[in-house]
Each structure stands twice: as structure tokens, then as C-alpha cells.
Length: 309
Image (cartoon, rainbow, N blue to C red; front, side):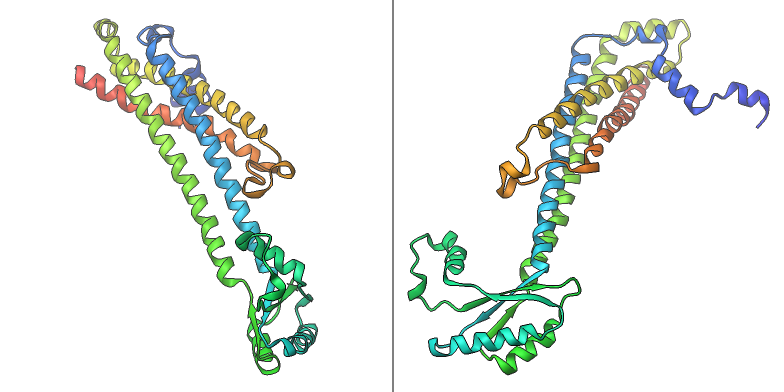
């Protein structure tokens, strides 16, 4: 590229600076206040606020499902069903098999109180556990390497006929799928919010162009090109969207931060929000809102100005 071309073609930083500073003559075509200004700022702020919550909820529910899946992956349950006079012997035999199985860290039988605690959410606190034919449950905790499920089942079938091993696969797989779907739902919600923002800003830009029809005609009479006029609208609406989105993002992050912490909430709401470096993710929302406003306003301005030609 020649030196003349370099002089007449400013670089990207210079163009961004010129876009932010703007042109006072062209800016007269865009109303600095009024309905369209308030609508653009409010829409951007509200959508950014909702985007923060959609992002936080998606991440929190994904973490919850992943944590449940990880916890189930490290544990298994052995269920022993046998007559009352054989249950103790089969339990002892099963514990011996588990003790000599590589990959199993601990194995312990659950007592009556623990069995009652497991059944209480389903049948209430007054369930007579002692009088019911409830199988003996053995809690198994794996080591980091895990154990051979197929081999253990074969040994148990040969030595403890009444034992059934549950490695929680049927519980773990739905949670893994749920985590992925929740993340996809979060992304879909953010895309819908972006589309709604673009639609509202497009309508606001078209309303501003229509309201300033006389000013646009005067600018054309003095030789202004449509690209010059459109640039003023694009700049003003992009900065409005950026300002509103920044305010909405800060409000959303403050609301998330004020939610009860994990040690105070518990249950399904445990850990709702962002953690660690995840707090940086909402920072990308205002720039994305500005890009959305830039594209939507540019399309609306060019389309409307061509229709007025």
C-alpha cells in the first residue's frame, strides 16, 4: 500500500474514535432526547438485565446437574434381598467381596435410621421401617480409578445371589443430558433477547428517521449522502444501546450478588449465580448489545433512506 493510500485510509482505531466522537452536523438529524432515545436506552437496559439472569441461571443449573452427576459417579449402592435368617450372612459375604475388589474405597451397610431417612421424603416420618421387608442397603464409595462393574456383578451373582448392584448409571445419564440442555436453553434465551433488542431498536430507528424527515431533506439539499446521514443514526443508537446495556448489566450483576449465598440458601437454589471467573462473562453483554444495535440501526437507516429517495 502506498503512502497516499495510507493517508486517505485511516486505521481501525482512528475509525472507531471518529465513530465515538461523531459529527456535530450529522448529529442534528437525530433527536438527542425524546421517545426514541428513552425507548432505546430502556430496552437495552431491560434486555441486558434479563440476559444476566439467563446466563446466571443456565450456569448455576448446569453446575448443579454436573455436581449431582459427579457425586453419583463416585458412589454405588448394593441391595441385598433375602429372608430374615439369611440377610446377615449374605451381608457379611457381600462386604467381604467388596473389601477384596480393587477400586472400592469403602463399603458399609446402612442401619435402620439411615434407611428411614431415605424413605421419609416419600412415606413420611412415621414409617415403621422395622416391620417392613426392606432390603439391606450397602453404600459403596469408589476410589479415583473406579472398579470393574461387570466383574463385580459376576462375583456377587456367584457368591451372594440376593445382591443387586446399582452403579447409578440410570440416574447419572439424565443429569448429564439435563446439564447440556440447560446450557442450550440459556444460549437460546440470550439469542431471543438479542433478537428482541434488535427488533425494538429497529423500530425506534425507523421512528426517528420518520420524525426527522424534514431535517433529512434539508441535509440532502445541501449535498449530504445517505451514508453520511445513516452514520449519524447508527452512531447515536449504538451509543444509546451500549449505555443502556451497561446499566442493565450492572443492575443484573448487583441483583445476582445480593442473592443468598450457597451456605444460606441450600436446596435447588444452592450456588445460583456466578462463581470465580464466571463473573467476567456478563461483561460481554454491553458490547454485544452495541453490535446488535449497530447492525439493526444500519439496516433500518439504509432501508428507510432508500425508500425516501
